[in-house]
Image (cartoon, rainbow, N blue to C red):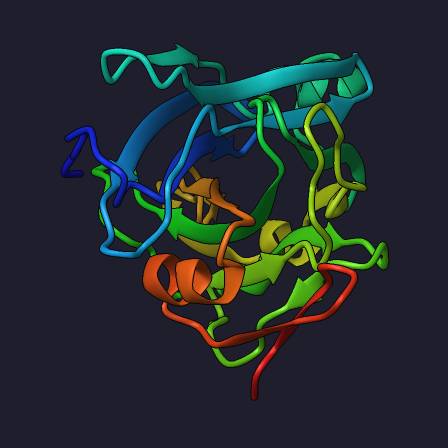
Length: 258
């Protein structure tokens, strides 16, 4: 990913990305990996930005913690960053083994960790990969059930796809405040374990039947991107940063202009 950190008043938006990958195996989770990447983008707009910041938080059975954050200090183009991993504590519920069909606690939310009020957007990605890192096309993203809450977040249906879900928090997020969780549970559809191949061989009068899980070693991937945009000239800033038209109410509430 490209990183652009040129200082200037045209910097109105940035994104933090948290990604989690768990390896599926015949006996549960063989290993766990996670990657976290930040990147910022510059856009042209007649606005100024000071001390914007955002933090992605996660609540699992182990409790609540900050997963990642990126806060602009406004001094010398310095960003204060912390990096973590999604789903690191998820399997504490089941002694380190992934149980398909089980709904694991996975509450994700956003906190304003900067010094100005802001609007936030979240983009969630879910997909499957093979052991070599290439996409597994036979497994539907819907088999990764990251359940969305009914807590007021707006889903942008036009921008969402089978793999990607785009959500907006429709209110100004004040300094120090947190949004309600936009997800609450994560489950892997249990039907994945029924996809097996059975082979029977007879040698020297002995018949042997071998059953192999079709998706042994396949990984499921979850990523969460969080954007923050300042509230000054909000409609123009959001159009410039996010490429969408919004209506801003007298109370600061957002709605998609579609």
